[in-house]
Amino acid sequence: MKHFISFTLGLVFTFMIYGIITFFLLIATFSLSSETLTEKENRETFFFLTAFIVTIVTIISAFKHFKNERKFSAIGISTASLISCYATMMLGLICFDNLNYYGKFDKRQWSQAEFKSFKMAKTLAKDDELIGLTKQQVIEKIGTTKEFLINPKCNLLEIPTDENWHLRVEFKNDTAIKAYLWQEGLGI
Image (cartoon, rainbow, N blue to C red; front, side, top):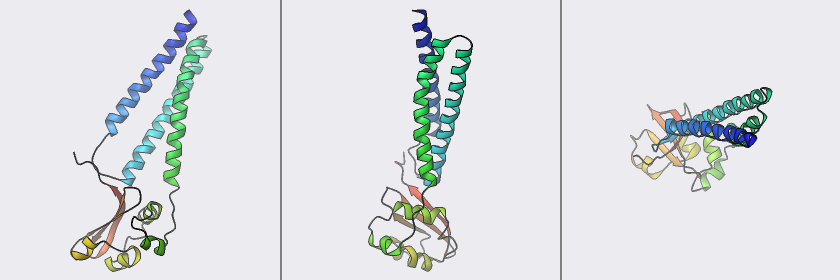
């Protein structure tokens, strides 16, 4: 019975710590407002690094318990750490996918699609391929929207992609100064 209690305490205590950390991470980063893709990717990277650190600390704690002859407590902690390892692996895959975004720009494919390729839009934004171009050069490269053409004084071109993101190109003095992907929030 003593071993079962030791195992259960190790398991429950570790899950409680995971729950508290998760709660504070969600509270600190939760937002219903609009965000750029860079902000979203930075948040995902922060989650990955936090999960990685928590996993390492949990494994070290399990080893210390094992060395101090508290084997069943160490087994409980190790069992809980399996979830942390899984979360770290899944978040790592998301971060890896964020880093491998390249989609070669194909003007024919781009112009034929109603919703533009997310990977192409991400490449245009992250590789600064539009920065420094004039409005006319940007329009020739990626096209435009009716709203943008109607208002010649408009300094923001917004084109929807196939993944609920919008490629935004900001202009100043007829030159593109900023290109990024934007997702509309609930605006609450």
